[in-house]
Image 1 (cartoon, rainbow, N blue to C red):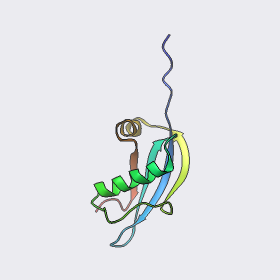
Image 2 (cartoon, rainbow, N blue to C red):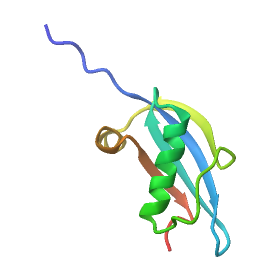
Image 3 (cartoon, one colour):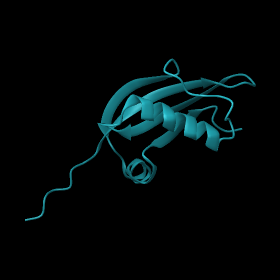
Length: 94
């Protein structure tokens, strides 16, 4: 008998980073429920580097646990590939 596919539970971290040119970037860092907080911050910094914002960083004052929920497919794909998914909310485009 085949085991049922268990749905991944994810933790969502609400993140605000002040932009040097003014305003804020607001995004969620979405990770598997068992991911440690230091990794969450590292993922946030990797995301900022991908946006060419390596002089800025995500710290514990910028990133707070928000809630847990069931994963959705696009998030799960990214989490399985790179460990996290970023959900852009405000100020993330140039």
